[in-house]
Image (cartoon, rainbow over all chains, first blue to last red; front, side, top):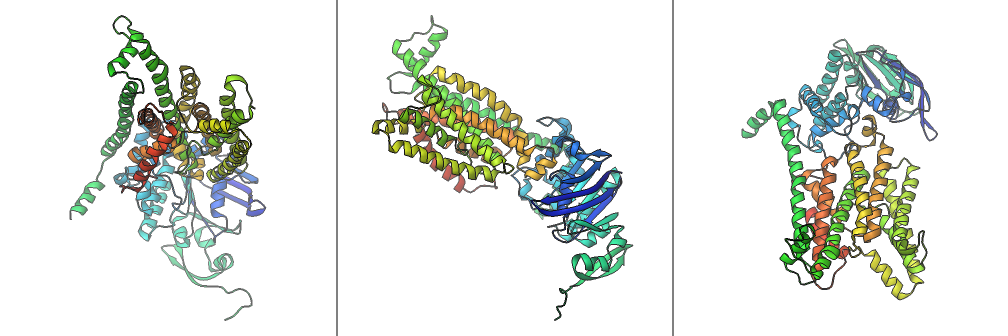
Length: 262
Length: 364
């Protein structure tokens, strides 16, 4: 078991965001977290990485309590990929990825870190804009750079917050293929919050469906992504087809509030 | 077609090539920093020969070397006084103060993620101004004797900054809270200073106003001791945190996920920077623009990487302040203008030019 989360609760001021969330992550597994806006997907990822401190519950990483670890130790074992929409200070792609080495060394980088960064840039195919400014490149490229930075942390678990938001379909597939390949080849695990149900279905080994802070359903994509769940959680009528052994969701129309008919 | 070919060529970049390019990219920054050192010494050298007293270049340098090789170089009493007691301490204080203000400016802008942040953002100047006014106008202070004004200025500058840091840490010390709290305290201390002035004698008010306009006229070798100690202690600490400051630039969340204790880094760098500036300000009064212009100037040339920006901004600050003071001493000699006025007169147009000119890419 890579990661074991038990009874996690988190609230902002007195507004509860997460309620009794329990989940497990196996080695070499992609776990997708789906749910409507405000369901707590991003909050859950931030709680796992201790960017936010859950008020209750335990999060065990390789059997060790995350809240007892130092920030540096967490950073060596959990890689976090934020949404690309966050504005950052100008820095080159190379320097951005190099920041991922921060948990591993003192206050300056050395030759070994530079080599590590080059290796990762090559792996993700972003070598050609290594010296461009992060803010100058396209959203798809930025996403790859952020994944690269998390990989530079050499962590066993990647936490990805909407890795495909703001991306065109080609870049969506490229980003997801990279994650899938990394998980298969290097044995790391990934937890990703994802809006797009079809991408989630296609690339996750298991799916957790969150609804207003609690887990509504969990399991294989085909067991979770069914018309009934989608209706209950999203308030949308949908048709679920099968495409290459995975459920493929076609949303039809939003369900009108109770008692209201056109 | 050329574009496509170039793209294909670019795609085949090897890691060796990129490593080489990165080395050059870093090398350029190092060259910029290193080349500032001879420029600084050149200005120091020229500045030593300029002043109200009628000394030739030869007289000035011979007075300097007389101390080291008395049998080879001759010096007069006048030259000795001018060079060793007036010009050199003043130049040295200019270098030290300029360096400190440049470094602090770079750090404050980086930490607060605000291009308008300056060494005085945390109310340091208004605190120092109030402290000095209290000493001059009311004769009250925390230490007595000859250190009354300096001690008061230093104490209230730090107090003001600590109040702001204290207030903002209650809300997770976000940059916005710090800046807003800074503005509030600036007005509060400004009002208290005005109140003191309102009830004071005209002559004393004049003295207090003169104190607040930044000036290197109080320079002496003994003042240089505390200023240098502050520089030697604070600069390395800020340099040690420079990479963490870079990571903070990617946002608090990212910084936390990369293992950085965000609040800790922010508070440490702000306290150290404030201490450095307070030490300078209590001897010079508030010298504006150096701490704002120097980091921006460097950022335009070498980019925002704090590991290089901090030393570069320090050296640029030293160059600018020494240059400004040379102008202040000579432009309408024998009258010596306060350097704070000159830095503002030189800094404002320079700054406007820099932000308005066409630039290749966004640097801030």
